[in-house]
Amino acid sequence: MLQVKRAAEQALKHAQARRRGDGPRWTVPTGDQIRALRLRLDLTQREFARRFGFDLDSVKSWETSRRIPDQSKCLLLVMIEMDAPVVAALVEQAAINQSLQNVPAAELSEIESVLELT
Image (cartoon, rainbow, N blue to C red; front, top):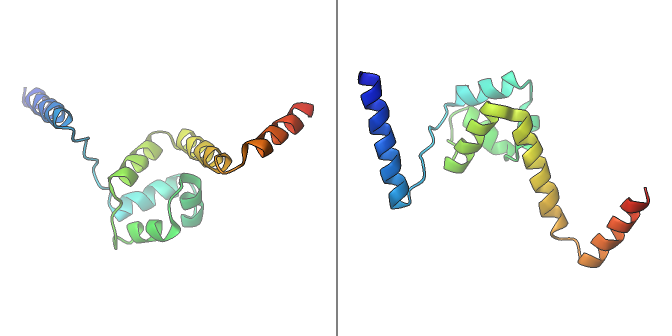
């Protein structure tokens, strides 16, 4: 019964926060938790940073608990924990899309023409 009451209280707090325009607050992982996640994925700090779009110095600072990730990074870490391959693919696609935004339209048309020939 106590668990049901706690769940209801959490749901109410979440609904009130959303009504105020406040988003959910993500739990900040410890440096050890971030390091454990990276090691479970069998990645170096550099590989982890590159794969998920983090700054290498940030990853190093998080793992040594000199700094903590901001809320947007905490959300990304939660998503990595849930499904790392999907998050990595989305980060890669977002990077490609962002780089294509800087290519002039005429060059994009030329690239598309070449790709259609292959």
